[in-house]
Length: 368
Image (cartoon, rainbow, N blue to C red; front, side, top):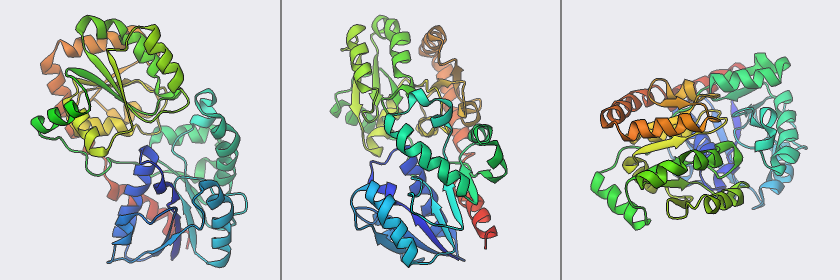
């Protein structure tokens, strides 16, 4: 088969969805000996695929730097000229003019339908209708956890038999780092130990306001800091105001987006990783923290119990007392933190990209 894959999302900052797309199709192209691939990029071809001489996928660049113009104009014209047996859209839904009789798409979760108030206006007005159109046209809808499969099936009951959980895994390169190296790197970022860590975009879904309010007395009484890692999003201003209102300026440090290596350092030296998200399709920061030996406290909602297993403390993301008590309990109990570290190492081994790639290819190959 000749398979077209839209990898234009790799032009953006590499966060959860972008990392998933890269790792999945890196594995697909490396392992699939039967099919031929045409990969579309925006701005530049990702260096990994440029040097993949063994399998030699065809790599093309959009004529537009704009994502909007790429998906609405370039891709429809490109697919009109070039003929493929299957079209895979792993990140952005295809544009309105895109025609495909053998379409595959990935829907990571049901946030836009179940929690619309936690999504941006752009998502509600632009991505939501395009995604719904893609789901209706798709031969198969891939998702990344059983929880997401149930939620998407609940919203689109008539599409339930087309939804396939292909799973997810740990992004490449997340391993524990040397203590001295991590200590030095964190000092360069202006981070003083001890600290708690939270990773995720600063938006309502990640529930940072809840964490600030719940942990305010802990941070002050224990003189411990909370490090917030993640890109500024549409909840950033509200978070800034709450930090001022709670007089947490000296206790909360926002790093913005950091490199993968810096993130490993931060996970490796944190006392506890705090992830009180309201809803996750998978929750990649949880497995990142596990792989770096960081004890995890997270929510008991959506896919998180499925991903965390028995390797994390799970709390109600609306109950501040539960989060406070869990943090105080772990801070006071080093042996419990060590137990969670060991469980985390075991839990992360359950997820691998080869399985994800095999599940995707099984469905695509059936469509011949």
